[in-house]
Amino acid sequence: MQNTIEFFKYQGTGNDFVMIDNRDLQFPKDKSIIEKLCDRRFGIGADGLILLENDDETDFKMVYYNSDGNESTMCGNGGRCIVAFAYFLDIFEEKTTFQAIDGLHEAEIVNGIVKLKMSDVNTIKNKDENFELNTGSPHFVKFVNEVENYSVYKNGNEIRNSATYKDEGINVNFVEQISEDEIFVRTYERGVEDETFSCGTGATASALVFLKGKNKVEVRVKVLGGNLKVYAEQDGDSFRNIWLEGPAKQVFKGKIDL
Image (cartoon, rainbow, N blue to C red; front, side):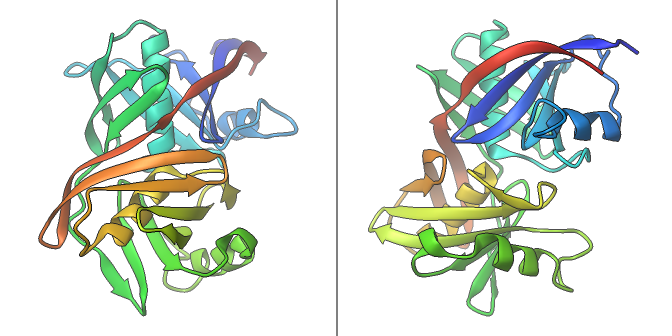
């Protein structure tokens, strides 16, 4: 096991990640090491850790871990950040394809703005006037008033740890419509077990619920860490050609002893 690794820190609308070039497969995929690296007091500090690895059929592979050290489902902002990282590593020029845990993704980058194609969504379940859907990760969507002052941690934690979701966990999004084509989303994320500044799959899930039944293909999404856009085409009860767009930036790089 190597004792020192080079890492890069990226953030996408405030959702931050430790990024590691693991094409040589030298990084030890140890839960306690990943958890320590993501710790904001005793490590680098991040919402998650992402490994960039080789893939036989696409430009690269994304392997994502939550800050609790467990490998997790798709992360939209993490996906945008790894695209920016792969671009930095000269793996592609403008457009790319890569593999993630939920399958194949396409992406493009222009002036630091990454547009990422998300998985199709076939079902949005109505759960007592709230909604449940999977955008690469499972999400619960609840529309509220004055989301800026809403108790996201308290209410998100209660829903995530309720009898229905306790075992598998779910990400919980609280959404307020602020104009005809814009929503404000705050998200409690499983694995982080707290509110994050942004959640890409959550922004996507919330946007799709907002778009459902409307003659619209684009929605602006305000999050604590900035602004995103979601594009999607409705096909009956399903959504196709879903894209998540927003900034992804390298914050710093360094080396750390494991």
